[in-house]
Length: 71
Image (cartoon, rainbow, N blue to C red; front, side, top):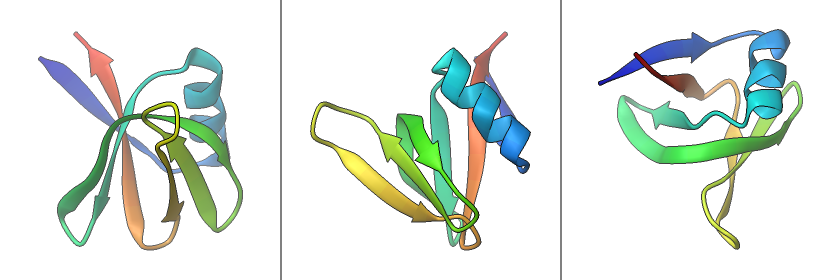
């Protein structure tokens, strides 16, 4: 079973990029992206990639981001 850790700060996102850990993205209490890795981020957007050509842009203010950690 996975443990979810909320990503809030720039340091959280930098750590996820460096370790290539998978994340889940929620918007309006629904999963909009699961199992993706963070490619890049800035103050307003987080870019995730879950496949070779599957890239998604998520508004950082409107979405919640959680790192998936294995126990």
